[in-house]
Image 1 (cartoon, chains in turn yellow, purple):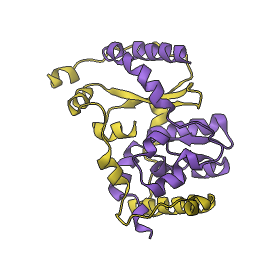
Image 2 (cartoon, rainbow over the protein chains, first blue to last red; image 1 turned 120 degrees about the vertical axis):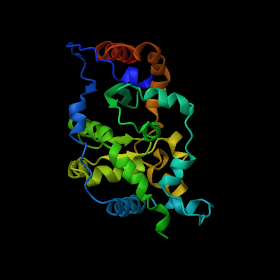
Image 3 (tube, rainbow over the protein chains, first blue to last red; image 1 turned 45 degrees about the vertical axis):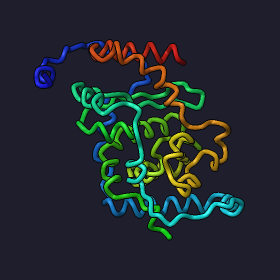
Length: 132
Length: 135
């Protein structure tokens, strides 16, 4: 059934949207190969950024509380493992049939919608659902 | 003790594939809003590194772009991460929790019933009508 749907023709539509909310997929793809630095460089760099941010902040937040540091190592992958989405797994597979699998949206602090871009399918829905 | 805040390399790799959407949005936001902008994002603790190392890095530094993790998503992270990125510890965020998108998606999810089988234009038009009404 999946093949039957995926091989179907796309309905061509020349109409364009008037709103300036949308960022076109061409504009998004400009940043496709943006990150060229190696994985190790990125992880070291993000550590430095966090240390700088912590240093720049008021250090009283560390002194006033009575919390203790826990020695268990935790990294971003731990957060990913711990994350549970509300929707069931089967429903995510169903979404793989569609080319546009969702929208990436930005709003201001008053909940006004500022920018939207389409998320075009690359078949890695589980990653995406965490990002959303 | 530095090791426990180094993000896992695998996760960074996955993030790199996906980073184009938020990067495109950050680029547009910086063009429109300019100086002293605060951006809350679910995975800002990892994403800020992506921005600083990308071609937007210098511009972000000039414009004093500030990242934070929304308070709801902050619960999934450890305390050290929260100290750095939680809106509670960032001055100027006032009472905003940084989770506006969750409120918006709560209402826009109902659109999926009608938009999933629509054509490109009709789907976008429907979403646009919805968000115009929401605004």
